Image (cartoon, rainbow, N blue to C red; front, side, top):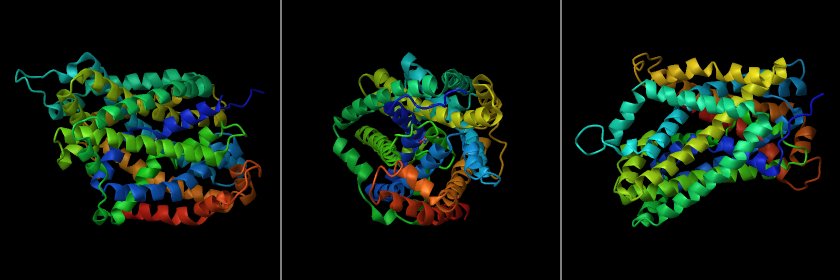
Amino acid sequence: MKDPIRFNSKIGLIAATVGSAVGLGNVWRFPAEVQANGGAAFLLIYLGCVIMLGIPVMLAEFSLGRAGRTDAVGVFQKLSPGKKWWLIGLLGIIASFTILSFYMVVSGWTLEYLVESLTGNLYRPDSGSGEVNFGEKMVGYVQSDSRPLLYTYIMIVLNVGILLGGVRKGIERISNWLMPTLFVLLIVFCCVSLSMPDAGAGLKYFFKPDFTKIDAGVIVSALGQAFFSLSLGLGVLITYASYFPKETRLVRTGVTVAVLDLFVAILMGIIIFPVVTSFGITDGESLRGGTLVFVTMPEVFSHMSGTQLWSTLFFLSITVAALTSTLSLGQVSIAFLQDRFKMSRGKAVALVLLPLIPLSTACSLSQGSWNSFKLAGYNLFDLLDNVATNYMLPIGAILLCIYAGWVFPKKTLTRELTNDGELKGTIAPAIRWCIKYAAPPLIFIILISKML
Ligand code: PHE
């Protein structure tokens, strides 16, 4: 029999898992949400969501994955044979594939902006006026059909190349390189940003607490953001945890991943807001996620010396963050095909990533020439984003907690959380309590309020 797959090292395991968590969610959703929803007040609520719900759900996934040691469907079949619980895993796989189809398109945009920064094209005016209008550039680019498709395909090919290498030689090895690079880049950026003339005002703008903004809707957004950002509810972390060695301390790993994910998200805000406010751009429209990254930041870079360098490094960081997240989204389905159907890795990679070509093409075109085809008022891109992020992800997370809290034997959960009783203390019962009693109703509230 082949050796079971395990991550090679502790660092590699953390790099791969943080790689999944840190992604576009940290870059273009988090800073904009914090600023719009009450600054430090939102941050406090977000922190509460991560501690009370995010980390417990993550640990539920870790425990299931390591106890079952197989893909997201197989885990449930192995732990509860003959029951239908495996449908939770299947829902997760469908949701992760759905997210992958539009996430790949946005990753393609980041790569395009990286290349355009490197060549300097992004900063060349399109017409003879001499001024570059970054808003028009972005619209022109997204609606041009062919170019976003080209870059989406390049991202798919990159994913195929890395995923063919497998868990250790592909995902783990590349994460070992990319994640430290990302952290170094972000720290450099942070220093640049904090040395801006008006940095203090930018930080104030980002963090200034405004408790009057906090209402039920804001709490729901914080919770949704926490789940998306930590890659929860889709079986991604079940799959990754099936590669954790038995010595891995789950609680410590979960806390490390959550802290690093939060650190990058906050760092992104510290990077973006001082530079943005230093150039006096503070209207609401310029600060929305996609606009912030693809329009406002290039605008800011164009006023800085070393425009091309900063722009290239910025888009390099985002592309890296996006790439390691797409790898994890792909791996869920690949592990499923390999483990359930005994497929070779090559076949499984092809079967997961080839269908993405038509799907991502449709998503990309739905922002361009197919924009008039709408379902329930959404184009395909927004529809998939909405359905997967707002519905499939919380439903998956609730079912997962119900399973881990009420069906999965308490003894096994405790054994996983404490490494066979090696780790003592009250943390395991507290986490179990959150998984069993707090998480299902609270996540249910998010789900319902999104439907209203
Ligand atoms: N966590 C990633 C981000 O913040 C997205 C993601 C969601 C990745 C779900 C895997 C699973 O961008």
